[in-house]
Amino acid sequence: MRPITESSIRGSFVNCSKGEAKRLGVPRDLDEQPWDDLDFLGWRDPGAPERGYLIAERDDGGLVGIALRAAPGAARGFTARSMCSLCLTTHTSGGVALMTARRTGEAGRLGNTVGQYLCTDLACSLYIRGRKQPVMGADFEETLSVDERAARARANVTAFIGKVLE
Ligand SMILES: [Zn+2]
Image 1 (cartoon, rainbow, N blue to C red):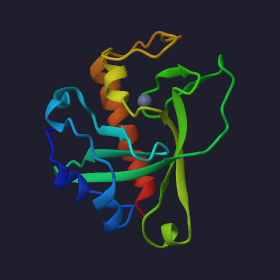
Image 2 (cartoon, rainbow, N blue to C red):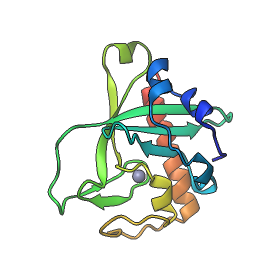
Image 3 (cartoon, rainbow, N blue to C red):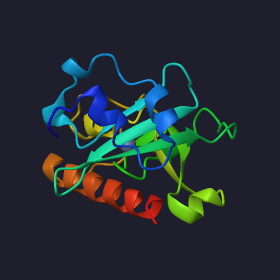
Image 4 (cartoon, rainbow, N blue to C red):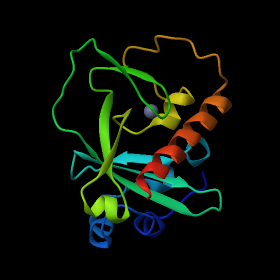
């Protein structure tokens, strides 16, 4: 994706209040993000560990930001494996978390959320490109190329955002 600034990040959120978008913790190292290798920007809030965020580019170049909350508890056994629903990387012991996003519009006001299992660090793009490795290593060989896996992850992000937007 193309490099984006703090103000464009804060202005992109669709499922939290303007006040929340203003206050939430944005990565300090935006200048050093590997933008060419990112299908979307994802991070955990250093000031609020249960919160995470992802910012994706729409086809028209606009940005969509989604605020996420990690579901509490439900720690699985150390050897339990879970798969991220965006990049399909398999992790053990906390490498995948159930993250929920409040839906927009009336559904959100009624408290409806969308939940998906995601890489806990939201670094899907880096796992796809081998810049980051899951703790236990991959347990199945992907037959897709990196480009195909990246395209699949982008399509999965778009589908996830579609469920958040009414
Ligand atoms: Zn992932």
